[in-house]
Image (tube, rainbow, N blue to C red; front, side):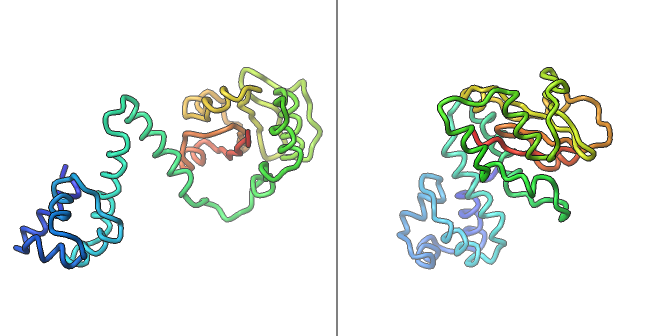
Length: 224
């Protein structure tokens, strides 16, 4: 696959333009442009845009290659690079995707991070027990009375109302919370879908919004 630098060199040579003219246009030294073409120097974003204008090409493919090179430079040689990139991709997608429905949901009203009760729970010396947090979340989300007898630790089910089934993936341990995000396997192991949306509370999620919609899931992050 052609790198950013190789693309710039190809465009310049295809248009038979001397190195010095391109360098002068983006106001850098000729030697620096040569390093950019050979991959030993990375240009600034605005310089990439200027190069696209100069060569009269779409800036998007150039910016994508430039950014890909920047990411590769950061993770190259690390044994966990591919795994990290996969997770980062899922997290980024879930961050930038827009909601697919304009209709307000329970999550529009459940602002966990702004809740005084939640803040007190997670900023004290001792984390809440599973039951304590389940009781708080269930009552906050549904306005209904929490029934401890309906909790199923095996499936992480903590109760339901007319529209939602509620699940809590949690242990009162900071390290556990940092390393146990909602994954596709966890979703697949949920009980069979019964027509209600599934409101899932967890510290993180490594699935995108499209996957959540497909499995009838609304996600709420626990602010540990």
